[in-house]
Length: 127
Image (cartoon, rainbow, N blue to C red; front, top):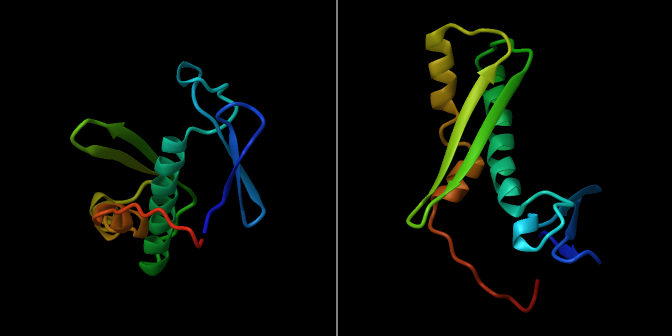
């Protein structure tokens, strides 16, 4: 369970997860002070983090040495759908066929699987 608590600053809130603090806020045009990360950026971060970890796990499984991986995600919100554009950059170059194989392996990372299912929202009195 995640618990988010309002801060004294209008629209700003804080979430502590396992000792790590995330401060969220709205942009100035939405009435915030930009004193934290926008909630949609946290959503994109979840996917980028999952992609990054999944690439490294896939490389470990295939015994492919890698120094570093950078995952980039852009969240595009449209009226009829949401698009997660992503890019994976490997610090050390991989043969193209190996890179394709890794990219296929990560297509269903856990966050993507979660976001791809039908979603419900339920107000609960007992969390």
